[in-house]
Length: 452
Image (cartoon, rainbow, N blue to C red):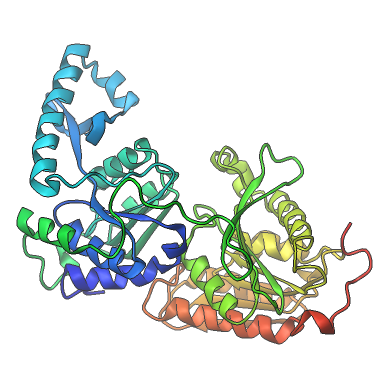
């Protein structure tokens, strides 16, 4: 993938994160090169734009190794492992912090002037850069954003090394990256124009970002605006230490319901699934994006790949969903991605749940191999043409599924990040659900015993 310049990359990245529009995000550009990209993202999302200023604190005798970082308003992030292994004294650490703050204050004055920093308290921080190589600066920026009180931190970049993406996704609520070229040698390799960005350009872009409030008094997002608008929900689940988090969007007269089960390393905030949910919602289907694991449970790798456990959670969640206002008696579909697709297939075998259709995006049906023969719901398997290993797994699964169809999206990889690939997935899912879910609630009587 090639970008003409940072503005072009920003416009393409903005489309990929459009699903975050309803989360009232604050867009934070890493100066200097990340700000032109962030400007385009903020303009599309109509979100406040600010810079996120961080100064890495390098070990005195090994400056490329960061022991921490400082941010504005006295925020300090310390890497305890590095601190312990390098045996930096308290006096040395204080001197690093002092020097880092002095440089940070000087830079803030140059770029922001008298403009106040946009508050991140209980907001979604969308950190944007023009690309990441090692990810050290971006990682520090995300840590500082969380320390400033952000309830969720998402990193969005046009390009990164695949290794960095894999490493950083474990630390973030989500990461959006348009391209991971191989071989990767520099961020500039995907830009035709990768000229230097100076402070004056950063200041000018911040001055032009007048479409949204950029003060700490920006209004809070509406949490429960009523039918037809996504809202955050908490879902009780048996055995869960706390309620599961979800995003529910039910139109006034829904034609059916679709629950989403994402794969490992993703979340209900995934822009890919949210884009698909938006397309389904536009077609009159209610959607529920949910996290089947709590924050504390996500660190337990045994649970992440315990498909039976995840399926039980999904069944319990769908049972709750059907009790919500406007949802009783509606036909149910399941949309699963990666490992979430395996959980959806196992959940579809629950007779009481009575699932009407299943769609798998880049799924791992092999993880549900012992249940495939018992899946009665019509199942659509969508796989990228360049996702060869997963394609083979889905071909084997199709042979065992009673009613299924396999669609290969040419040129697409596992995450369907290529131009037009995700739009194809969304259209396929929409048509499948509209075909197999009953058109309206009036034409389908509730099944006795469906609501235990």
